[in-house]
Length: 76
Image 1 (tube, rainbow, N blue to C red):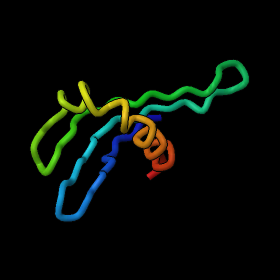
Image 2 (image 1 turned 180 degrees about the horizontal axis):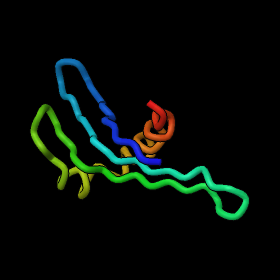
Image 3 (image 1 turned 90 degrees about the vertical axis):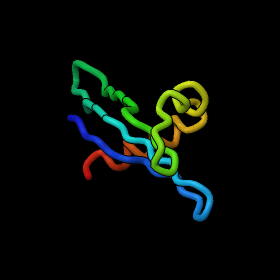
Image 4 (image 1 turned 60 degrees about the vertical axis):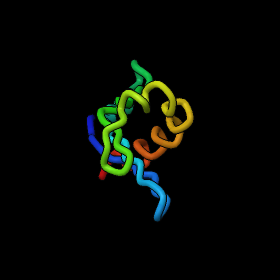
């Protein structure tokens, strides 16, 4: 299964970071284990695209939160 979503971190009056992503998952079966994959497709900060900056400097600090969000919202 595959879904797309937007993960938002917002501090009112300061900034809004939006991470657009594609999330793929397979629940597995008796012969194959469950698996998933998360790909960040675009990142904006207050409307300005910063995807390369995110990849270089922010991905490690946000990755776990983003993955949890994608898993929790995969059926929406």
